[in-house]
Amino acid sequence: MTAILAGLVLLLVAEIYAVVAVANAVGVVNTVLLLLAFSFVGVWLTKRVGLGVLTRIRNQLAAQQLPGTELIDAGLVLVAGLFLLVPGFVSDGIGLLLLFPPTRALVRGLIRRRFRVRVLRLGPGPGSDVIDV
Image 1 (cartoon, rainbow, N blue to C red):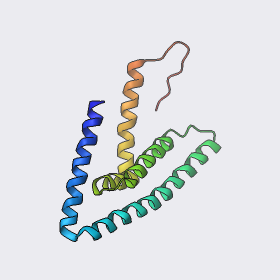
Image 2: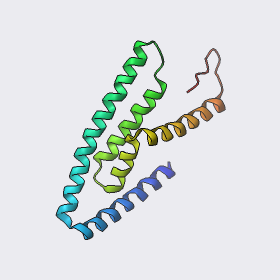
Image 3: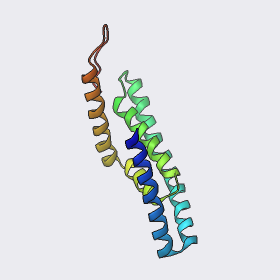
Image 4: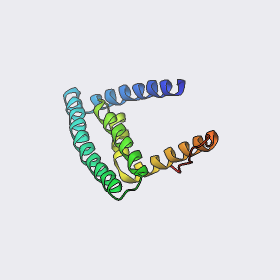
């Protein structure tokens, strides 16, 4: 919990620093316009990528397969959209990185590894099946 709080404080400080630096370089009005443009483009990209992920989930379900990778991607696209909605250049950069498939695949691999370690550490309970994430 403290790591999350420390990360949020660090992100806030980085956001303020980046906005002030950009405002000094291009002016306050241009900075606000850039932040608005990033937000609008980010929402559009998130919608586009999110619809693609939903289509893949539907295709997996229609083929009677468990959409594990697609569900993780859907969560990552949601997080990317949240980062893109927050005004700031650092959060927009993180959001854009999560929307790109190669970067999303890297983060997905980290998440899978984290869940796999947790599942193996907990072990199967009585009468439960082990699901490979």
